[in-house]
Length: 454
Image (cartoon, rainbow, N blue to C red; front, side, top):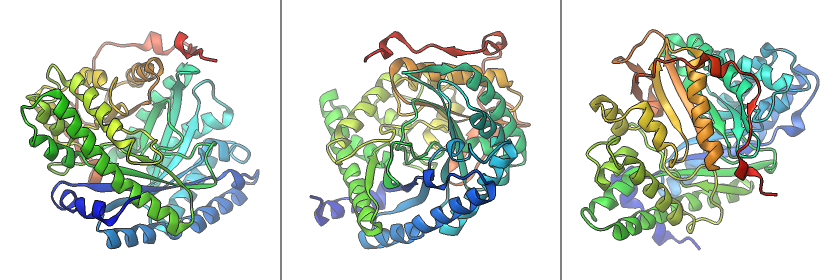
């Protein structure tokens, strides 16, 4: 049982260490909205979202006031739209019409993002999948609150290289379509391997087809809390270091469990999972990079960085998993560049490169996240970077993702400004050698041998 003592124990964390519940994400199944008439489909989608989510924001605000716990975002995830629109959508423009409907619904209920403008194509693409993917640049350019994702690989199926090639082109086209805003559209587009069905964090959230009609998922965050705790064991051994991380992760996750239980009870919607990821923000003192530096690195990117991150990720999971009845989503530590001041500083200092970030993604929660690169970077190079990251996820049986932002008109040394939680990012250099012949091959990379477990 969670009691008020546990809540009061977190007051200091909230007031001084940037502890917050990053998001309450309401998952809504749209399977019962499917219709062959596009106008009727849009009507059903708007009606279902605005009905089920009408009390989401007010419920979150009530919990904030009652318990004194900041809940930064209230969001919605939905069934992948490539499935919902398959019967009605014949062209990419038809899918854009659904995107506009989703944006209107999100605005009506007051959430800041709605995720699930998505396609799951790890083995092959239907005509509907391809039309949705091709609609992404226009959809993200014409909406404010839509987030999009494409799952192009899995440990069980391999990597769909046709989809990888297309996604490289789509990332580039999205950058062009939103170039007046430093290619902001790409910050709302994630390419996945092994995407989880219950991820509450944007931009990759969607509601998997195995989920209930509606579900409450919560994402917590507390890099600042972990850093403060580690300051007290500076110079101590690894055993004490690990115990401190575990105990702190437990406390942070208990806050998420409390909020999830309250939101579920008040809205009459089942509780799904708590995602206990350490998700940084641009705020000073709310950085995963600073945790790694507190562990003993001069700068993130120095030798030892991957080992330190692996340890942090593992201890966060070990501590958090005991604090919630259901842990899921991504869970661990995120390493987005633009959303973490310590990461930004490391890039400026020259200690952190794209290649080192790729190595770190082998042991973090997600992958290459919120990384700004030169706008002239070719679509095939972007596809090559996606393919590398998908291979890490496929072989290691973990979720990996790519959120690259080729900022049109900017070069290495420039800075891209995204605003809010998305922060700002220095433009990072990309390997100039080409991979066109590799990316132009058709078909898919087979699943690894260890995927055969039946």
